[in-house]
Image (tube, rainbow, N blue to C red; front, side, top):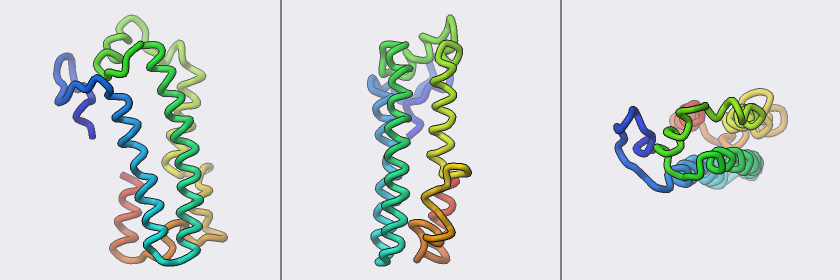
Length: 147
């Protein structure tokens, strides 16, 4: 996944012309894991928790994509190397300060941490989409969520 991110000047594993699109596509694959894990539990509560979590993840992916679109408009490129090189005169966080604050909120919401921990909703859904999972599958979900 990190093959297209430049490490230094001229040091990159893969120079993709559509690096941002690849980044958005790979980051949205987590939705399928959440949806399928709730469905595979064969419980209506786990399925409802996975649908709830999927709805929140998709809604913040849309916001995340629109905020990344602002950076694409500033740099006029989808290539990660060209985006980084176009910030030599001024970093984009300075003219895009309101957008960067929205980006911070979106990435906190993507991690499902407080105050955006609605999909887990311990009071009515026990543990969200991994209600019926225990032992090794629960540990894998927990590690993947923090990873």
